[in-house]
Amino acid sequence: MRTWVGLVVCVLVFSVLIALEAGRFRVFRVTSESMLPTIAVGDFLLVNAHNPPRLRRGGIVAAHNPRDYDEWLCKRLVGMPYDRIEWPLDGYLYINGERQDREPYVSTDLMETEYPVSWTLGENEYMVLGDNRPASYDSRDFGPVRIENFIGVVVGRYWPISRMRSFRGEKATR
Image (cartoon, rainbow, N blue to C red):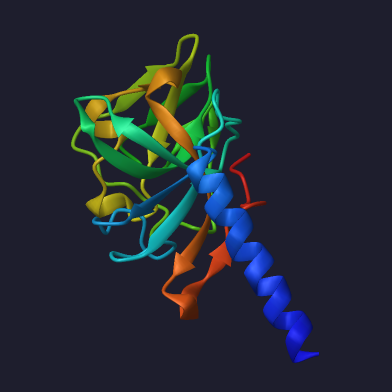
């Protein structure tokens, strides 16, 4: 039995190395608290760098910062092309006029705002937010992210081993 487990682990490690070498996957180390409690500073993430990325609402994505292409961001995808995204003074996120009462992954449902914010996304434009809304640098600061800025979809955390998990199948907002 031990031999089989060792063999399976070796095959998995070898497969990941081949995928990394082929450019299919990229590895990133998290340097920001913007995705707490889901992802912490120091976590290592595996990103599926399929081009174009297969984006879906509620997924975790890696993207180039629209204001500094050399900086990468890890965020939650909340707005898709042609969506209307709003943050009125009540502090809740609205997508196409529907209040998002419960986003299970955010540190708080309310987002403080000094003035109402609204965006209607265009073709190939997306809205990203950090799960730690009060401490996140995200689309509220730099606006929509264009499709060409996406690096890929975060598929899992592999380090630290005690927090290893897959992010496939994350619950989407509405």
